[in-house]
Amino acid sequence: MALSEFALIARYLVHVGAAREDVLLGVGDDAALVRPAPGRPQALALDTLVADVHFPADAAAADVGHKALAVNLSDLAAMGATPQWALLALTLPKVDEPWLEGFAAGFGALATAHGVALVGGDVTRGPLTVSVQVIGCLAGPALRRDGARPGDRVWLSGRPGEAAAGLAAWQSGAGEDRRWARLLRRLHRPTPRVALGQALAGVASAAIDVSDGVAADAGHIAAASGVGIELRADWLPLSRRLRAWAGDRAAVDLALNGGDDYELCFTAPAAADSALGSLAAAQSLPLTPIGRVTEGAGLRVRDARGRELAGGGYQHFGGGA
Image 1 (tube, rainbow, N blue to C red):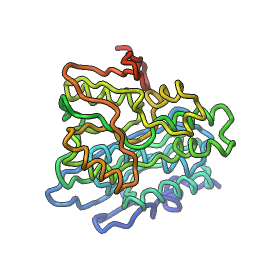
Image 2 (image 1 turned 90 degrees about the vertical axis):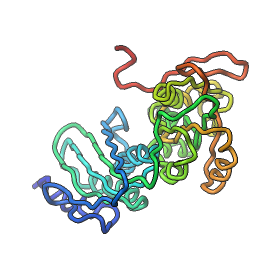
Image 3 (image 1 turned 90 degrees about the horizontal axis):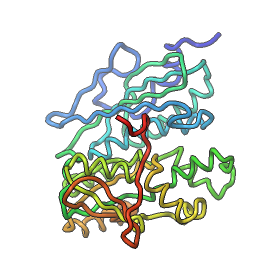
């Protein structure tokens, strides 16, 4: 006999994540009770992941659990917030205990690593869908999208394009080739840059996490800040692995428009160069200047010869009005 939703929650989700003293009442009641830190603004984010839209339906359950939380932690990272609690709404086509056990393991390992307690949510029946809300707090001013100023540099963490290449490898059937294992890991197990976001507070002028592609998300900063942004395609920190999979030209397109990287794109005044170099060394994380903030409006991407390239990025409903 299949377990009820309450039995599934009790068996697999009650003790997921970190144990926190600020959780007064967690999973199992009509609502969670938590104690916010006095005087600290709360940051809240929510993302929904749908099978075969945000992750392959045949992806490992632990990978789906990890990614469902990671994409939300990435949103908090882009604000410079410290994660605290999470809520989970999980829609399953059927009761599949081994799948749910794997999902809980992937979700829980990342939650524990970041000190996040799962405090509530819901399990129901339907097409495989995962919605996660995360709540965190700010120790100081939030990083926002609207602070970029002309003269700032545009920076990017990590190596863009690898997750999009991982998806292409998965879809092509090349995912079993060990040469592309790193690309698949970047797709299925993104690393939320929480520590970087916290360190950028007071240093960066604006920030966003890269979910829809570097070009699209840098364009969001430009629009929110009322400035222009010019990116240099030849400055993108492309990995050898990405170039080997895609070739040089396609690698640039994947980095600019592929999405699913969950790195941070941010702007900072030139005076912050030294501090950012020290931060990159301290976190063992590449931080690369990839462009500049200009007067005007909109995003432009240029190659090494100054020629303008097309930029896109992922959009759920296309670009029409």
